Length: 167
Image (cartoon, rainbow, N blue to C red; front, side):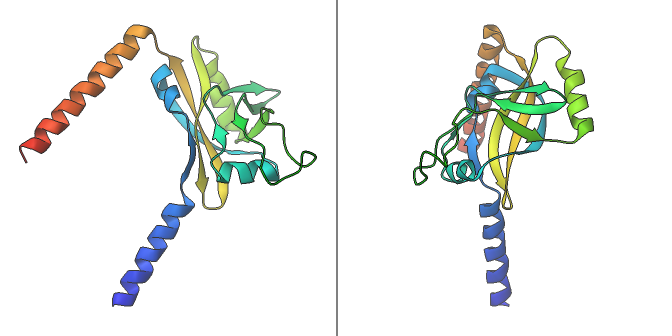
């Protein structure tokens, strides 16, 4: 029986390692109110994959556009791989194609036609051996909205600490 438990724990650890976060855009959740998210694939070259697996991606200034019926990722910096020559390395800020179904792209296009909505990359993560990116449809927050969100977050934190104190 003990062996079965060890195998299950090892399998769970392997699944957790296979689904790990590579890069996160924490500022996006502060700047935008995320209305909907979508997980898509991303078209990468070999040195980009190696750099992302080493944690060398920055989503901070990134955004997505729909051009010619394709979903494109712009302004995301993936550092050149340190062990590759300049000839084989990639351009850090190149435009990358996102892989999504046609109906998903059409749905996003319909939402983006509304005023004030944008497509923002939220995180890059591994799903098994595949690198995926989560994008969100976001509405820009005004300064007073950011303050209200911070105040709400602070009050929830105080409630949690008070509850923990009395348990």
